[in-house]
Length: 281
Image (cartoon, rainbow, N blue to C red; front, side, top):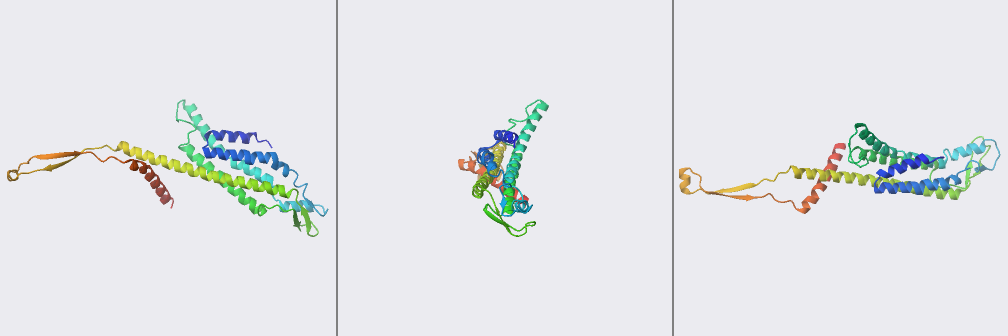
């Protein structure tokens, strides 16, 4: 199998990823892709040829192998790697679309075509959701098909056309079990990294939204002077209906404390969350 296109896709996504996203790419490259190509393919290379039963009934071994391994484990892992990495194409295509728009209109439409804001932020979040969903879906499928990560040395098969219950032997069961544990742990680590990256991006976006709202309120707020006048009317002035002397004290509006400046964006962020959950409910 050629992995050149797969590697090019992941290398392109690395330009627009966050720090957590680059860690995810390292896990996919080193702990999954390289291990798969260098070792796992050799362990499962001739799994059907090495599957032997203690009977020479024509078709018995094929039926038993298909029963215990409806989908080849190594091919299932390969399909998972491909589908998990495919959503990253959305980010690359979105950046390419931005560059195409600037080239088409021959002017600068974005401060940075790869900046994580606006539509690109939504595309990145969607790609993370798809990647996490594929990871969880494949783990569920694997456990549903094989009932866990255990690879027994001996399995008993009574499927037709076998005349009776026969013993079948799986090649390299311990080695396969080790690789299954390793690949499952790497998949679980990728799920954790995806969830952490989504949380980081959402919190960062909400914080930027809160700071932006706060700065907007500061700009639109025009300090005004308030005058507090104490009118003093003399008894003679009261009888004559004239205004007496009055004194005015000018006072400035209170300055915002540093604690208030720090708290305001956080308050807007929490208000954004409450409105979002109330709207979704």
